[in-house]
Amino acid sequence: MTAQPEIRLARVSKWFARPGAQEPFRAVEGLDLEIARGEMVALLGKTGCGKSTTFNLIAGLMAPSQGTVRVQGLDPFRDFDALRGKIAVVFQSDRLLPWRSVCQNVELGLEMLDRPAKERREVAQLWLVRLGLSGHEQDFPYALSGGMRQRVSIARALATDASILLCDEPFSALDEITGQRLREDFAALVRENHKTAVFITHSINEALQIGDRVIVMTRPARIAYDVRLAPGMRAGPDGAIRARIQEILAA
Image 1 (cartoon, one colour):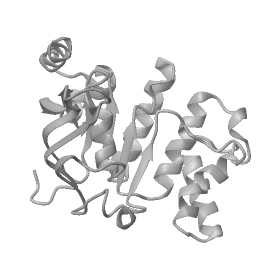
Image 2 (cartoon, one colour):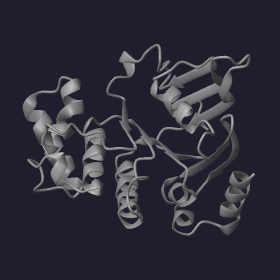
Image 3 (cartoon, one colour):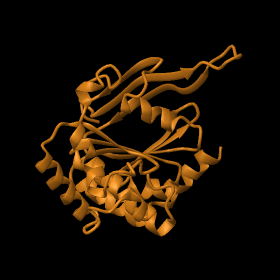
């Protein structure tokens, strides 16, 4: 790891009070995690293992109960405004605004960053072309397929030129063929543009297809397995890696 990781969680715990219970619910417990600039990390685990809580801590949507979270050296919860424009999120659902055209939806993040109208339109159109949506700029979300809507969501995130992309199971609602094609396109764009990406998933195949590094988490969010994949391994990962991941998730 580098001396100054892009994302760092040090002894992080997060718990939530439970009405009528003496003990809080512990979603994350003593988590240590460092992610270097330019890494694409897949956080893999079963439902309820604390992946989404970890995601929300990195995104600055909540503060840890204990420990420290740093993104580019800043506390993402306390310094939320200072990280504005440096983090972009791709959600499980596309979250497009139905009253805005495709191009206007892609422009939204740039609008929030107070970019000039001409620049917003040019950047949005560029990313729509790169994501295979040329000719759909003036369409509205209802006219698009699920895969196309998610491509618009990805274009919206990339258009801001944020250095960190946080992705919360963005392809889980898509059919297998559409999801695989979109994962390949997304991963290629992230690497081509030298972004740091954290990708939440519960799919072993998805984690191995996308990640430069796969981290398997168990409940409460702890790292049970951390493996880096060489480029060739993403095309056909070592059977021992898959077997180890399956063993952990089956426990």
